[in-house]
Length: 138
View (spheres, rainbow, N blue to C red):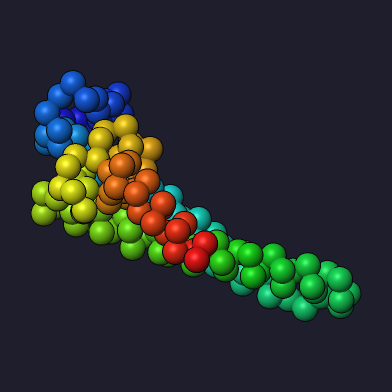
């Protein structure tokens, strides 16, 4: 399948679930997402290195430190996301991608398109969140 075909292709519920075309679509979507995150991270590192100069004004220094802390928290979240992307790519390779870890049922193309790292079907995710809320409220 050419890259033009993949750019125009959108998986649908009308075709066999996780057929080779869908798997390739999601693999490319995940790889592209990972590349974007890595590119942003390199930009952040460059900015942090440039920003490391001392600010004589206390307010400027505090603002700069606050910005840096926020940036580092964002990068940490993205590092964790890369782990989830890598895990999803591994599931594509081993044939388990797109199937709920709890029920084994298909997660659904629309959910995977919106959240390609999803490991639970919508129903299982909602049940998981309801259980979490009950434990938090106790």
